[in-house]
Image (cartoon, rainbow, N blue to C red):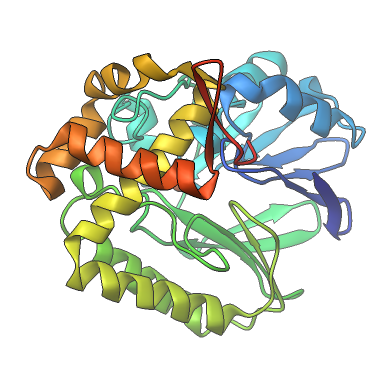
Length: 307
Ligand SMILES: [Fe+2]
């Protein structure tokens, strides 16, 4: 775990994959950006209070999108503090409509609680976090309600799941629609001209080379456009690992039946791999065992990926 002060009193907290990275602005009326995954809330709380911020004092939560690993603490923190919660207008619509499909929660069988969204953000808005001003940039593709936050004065970009250093966040075309890859391309183009010194992604370490990261993501999109199987394989791999992170561990014999009971696994294999559920499952599990990403202990499976 890495904690650092990126601007005066604004702290970056690096998490793993089950929980997204998040931010704490320490003041009399504290602001949080993203709140981790629900089942890891105790750890999220420990990290935030470790910075001297009491959750019952929080005045505002800003979410970069409504995926479960970014909003997990929202409900509990809002119960304790009565804080405002700000989302892009698309995310506000999902939450107001209690739409747990568009947020992916139901599709991927993820844990999450609804909360009250009290503030709407739009592309171009400026939000003040204490003395720090961030521009809201709407960046759909990975998530229809995705935003990034840009501080032009200090040249800092909070890029969430729109831009990672070496890879791209999972693309769920079944929910985001057939235009999702093109939306992601346009979103990357929006970021290209920004003057940026340091980028804080939703997962992974901070980095500095904006152009290089954008190029890598654009190349990945090109590969996706040329090879649909790659989209399906990447999705199944990511969500399998995410499933093991959510469950901590699962009996080996229970995993395949569990997957067949979810919406996402069957639909993804139907969409990309000719409904060959068991073949695809075995193929992906074998590569994970070979690479040591998933391990077996007393008939239980777990992943070494950091939560
Ligand atoms: Fe996400």
